[in-house]
Image 1 (cartoon, one colour):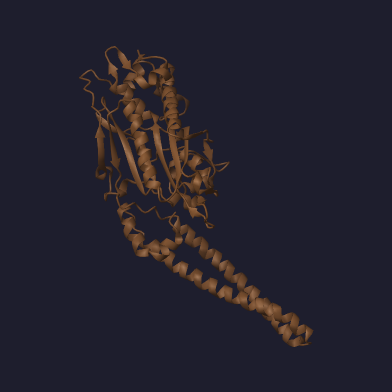
Image 2: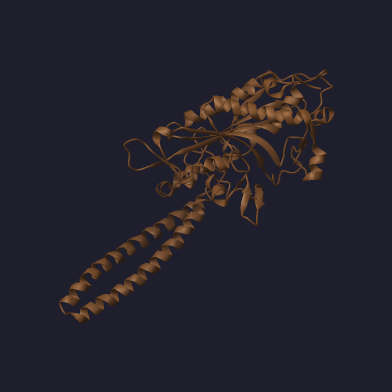
Length: 424
């Protein structure tokens, strides 16, 4: 969340910056600044009462020793009155503090200056496009037909077991999935990321820490009896490893990677690109997460973008990198780059990764701090994460783009992981 002092000191700037995310923050910011002023007034009054009470407490003993019983009794009565006043002010302060917090968490992160203006994905800026789009001819098949032809994925069986969006992978389809996961994890480890195996459910505090709650509760599967949430991405548990932690500056950047199943209700997206693997409720993904020094977080972002780019290059997929416009960015991100690969049979671009810098937004919620050598006061860190990579649309593009009359050719980098060169 945005720093409260920053909002108070820069109300006009916050409102202006958030316009790029098509968010009207004027009413919330005005209410926050008004309540913040009330808090300060209450604090001043409470401090005055406490000072007077401390002074009287010291005088009461002296008055009794001097035999001034009436004056001592009056001082005691005043002390009792001050205690009641202070308690009332403290309660009022806590109430206003909660009101401020509830308003504060409604404000999205401020977009970086480089973020383009815009409201829809059509306004995103293409910063790079590479790779050749294969010409498959008239006989090309979409991945859901290839999956059936080669008995790789059974979508109907998934419907029987659970419902739409929960496919069952079989035989070489399962091995192909496992090969991609291991390849992505190995590449992340080569790049210096420490592998983590996190829980697949998290508590409310974890959902709040990374910004899924209270913004996206409708997209998460909620285990109501235990008040736990199935993770939408490994970003949530991995980033929360550092909740309420103070790191040493020399530990930065912290680099973690994790494979996990991911669960998303995808509420409101029915009928939109849902065929086959294009949009699922459960899918596999390898995530990379970094905790960085604020002065170096954009260098880290560039490094993470380069890492994801190396993966799609090694898989031989045509791709493009987009800088998301303000209206297409997440609630928590300051800057996001999306990766899309070209699906040759569907003749469309499919998003396979988002790489984001959240600056201090998540860390402020997490109370994730670091202390540079020689400094006494810790600072708020910056957090970043990226998909490296999400599997379903990668699998879709690989199956479609590598289809031949003889079968589907497995990318060379995956052959050692698969144990086969062809899917036939």
